[in-house]
Length: 243
Image (cartoon, rainbow, N blue to C red; front, top):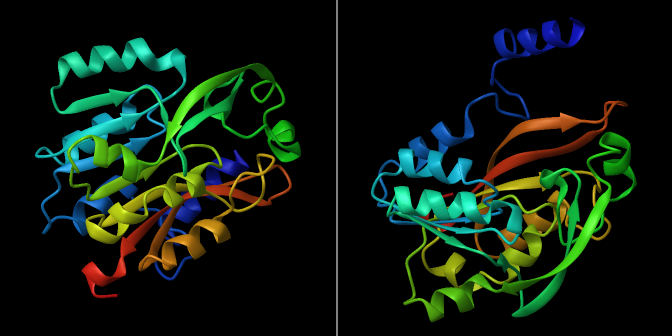
């Protein structure tokens, strides 16, 4: 009951004004920010079952989504969705900063699966779901190279939810970030959940090198001690938005 009251208080009393974290819906925020731009190409890295891809296609009806998901658990679901919607294109590999094959740590809870092994804090937060089931070799490639091989598609929006591997994907997307990307919506880790996984500070420094600025932070999550663990963030191309 105390948690419910605290949530209600935050949403009614503190709603948005001068807070570090926004209580707004990040997808509605993206729609508003990109309303005056033509959105034809979207990357969904860490697509899982395609739930977020469906949201993005609804918000941006003129766009196609290229979804990258190496976990075989979701392959059939994504294939079915691609048959239902001709704007959705699944790719059963992962984005990184190089081309090849890497170990993929598959955990009991699919949402914890990562290229990095679960760390101490993740094991404390989700002891059952973070246990390792299998390690599988999966294909990885840089987004820039994939785009070059597929007709240099124009991409305006990138969504990343790849459990600590976001920095690797961004390092492999330097050209597209410079040329056409307007916004990046990504999960961010404020404190380590994976051994070797990137933190918010790493992602922020990387994106600032390419002219992106932090717009807002959404959906913060804490551990049982009140330590801020992760959230989501929108970064905007400062040059294209005049920041």
